[in-house]
Length: 251
Image (cartoon, rainbow, N blue to C red; front, side, top):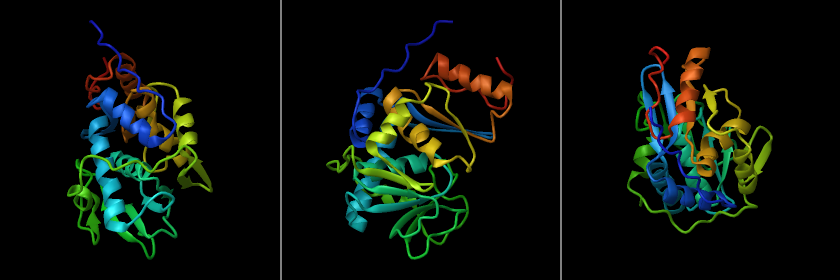
């Protein structure tokens, strides 16, 4: 079988807004995040995530008046919606606070997570478009940001700005980029809501912007050796072909 060419590597960048812009220009619609579940595969390309990031950045600035140095809460398990939220917040220069969202005025919260006290909340869930599956009291994230422009505003990011807070520590833009570059290429399996932020932030949100390779989030699949081999085989061979059926026989 003839193998296709590997994805091009995005140009180096010193902050996450420039990393996203460079990756979108080089990678286009190549996959950035693939979520493998037992019943389906969800995937978002780099260009699509850039659009969600742009909408999020405009929503934060126009709807909530947030700018560089302000804090946005993010509560819930990793997935493509948290990635889009992070990228939009980072583009605007915001600091993403992961965990319980304490002390923030605005938060993006998973439908099954506890809502931060005193925060204005939008929700996300496990539907294909990131919407909540069940009824929720707060506005869904996808609806909240949908009307805002697809083209990002002027970036408010800088290498020394704090990009995220979690687990009693913080990361600047430069630190998250360095952590992502240090990760092994094509071997990024994440599983379930208990993944620490110190792993999923650089792996899921930043790694595709630095390597040109997608990150795979395993949600209840690939835990055995055969499943892991199928995923790793796909990653090592062809970044544009669909991943193998996680429930089917190994090749």
